[in-house]
Amino acid sequence: MGRKVHPTGFRLKIIRDWNTRWYAEGERYRDLLHEDFAIREMVRKELPQASISTIEIERFPNQVQVVVWTAKPGIVIGRKGETVKKLRGKLKDLTNKLVKLEVEEITQPDLDARLVAENIAGQLERRISHSRAMKRAVGQAMRQGAQGIRIEAGGRLSGAEMARKEKVWDGRVPRNTLRANIEYGFAEALTTFGRIGIKVWIYKGEVLPQKEATDVYISS
Image (cartoon, one colour):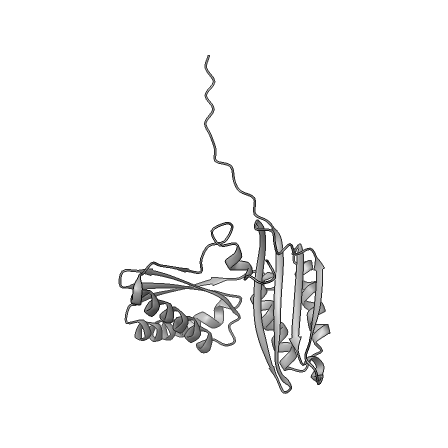
């Protein structure tokens, strides 16, 4: 099951929360969903070099709160906050609502699955060997404290006539375990031979349910 289902959606409401938090019904749900897609597309298009991992969206009456998780907050904020002000204005024009934009820093980008996948894709576009890029990413993640990592690359690797898939892994990645804290990321490399897809799973340990504290009364 873990091979067919998205690892984040598989664990929603168990150890993961939604990246988008709001409620709507009928046509309004459809309109807001398309608006979320447009917001994410605009943020990534405006800041292609900012190493953006996750974009969280939360809605309030006449207000949209957008949280951008990035490994390079300086690029997102810009000099004296100019870049973030321009982005906030464009999002306001897109949604016709008040936009609150927050920037959060990712302190360990080597443990973020999407950033690892994008890093490998960038190396493939610069004609670096796929096996070298994948092995380097695995080593860096394990040195940063990951308990396991798995990377798959599929496509015309090294310019081969026939597409194939290669895998590199280290440690353990229990994809079927619901309490396993697994991050998943996907990226595509646009090479002269065609698209190469990169999938990354990073296992960071188990999230155990916390027991509720109970008061104990001792009668004398």
